[in-house]
Image (cartoon, rainbow, N blue to C red):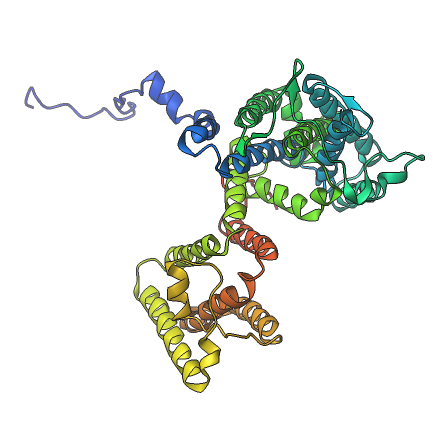
Length: 480
């Protein structure tokens, strides 16, 4: 045997250890899951803090960014109840409203009280937490659908009181449907922070919202890693097992309600100081859907995921306000979805080519029959609008029955796609895509407000099909 050869291992001896170069301490920390989840909030803070330097001071995007930061905080509060403790609370927006009205009552001319923000904001937090505790008391023994019904009932009570609160015990408490106006902006140590000066938004509100985000995020991080946080997660996974292990299940539910409601009340005070007014219409059901979408999309139980979900939903809702921007988003999402589903393949070429050919043929046939069928102008400008007008049929005067029929037909075709397979599905996909473009240009883009929530629901359904646990949510293993 050569001196350079290594003798084989004797029978029964363990194999030689494989030398693996260990990672450095910095690399290990960088690739740790906790570090990865902390990077996202830090990036969010950095980008938001730099916005005043990147945008013109008169840009309305600064105000929108401040509201988005506030809604991130609000979504983190809902994540306590839904994500940490696993409780289905459909009255969460009412806690947000309680904080908003608390701030408005003590910091306005309503009762001639002009309390400093150093008092009114913590007061809104405390009042929100107390109301959450009171709501949790009668519902602490309820779970699932029963808990959802009770909290939804509380939500409706809140809306009824705020809409009819101009005569509670002979006093005008909430202003009724007219709300409370001329609310004081934030003021600290007697110094008032005006929301805007000469039409220029006061970026101090953005930094106040970011400061509150830091406080809430860090506090909830510690709470989630504490014994209470671990008990919340046990309650979420299996309430019966948690109770058998000796955990105070009812007390855990109450604390989850109180903590989440306190964060919602804090957010309500901030938003009211930013808007300098509060109206009951602000707290209706669409807001509840929006906040729940943020939490579910990002991943219930994941703080970093909730931040991502809240930012994504805020951006999408803002883009959908303008028809031109909404059109870019619609076609971009449609194209990316097709590529993601079909990859680069013959099927992709067949679907894309067939859809384009169908559109140009249908447009040409409709124009040859009656020129008015293609004489309509798409809402919003831009290059995509001009291209769409040459491909999608946009009548100059859409018949009243045509829009609903096309919308219902599109839903039927989408449902049929789930039942077909192979080339049958691809063949049906071509007219479905073109009909979707027709409905978008003729029905949905003309009504931006309801369209925002329809698109929001479609995005949520698509993400839940692809990743049911959300973007950063943890997969759960169920033993059947």
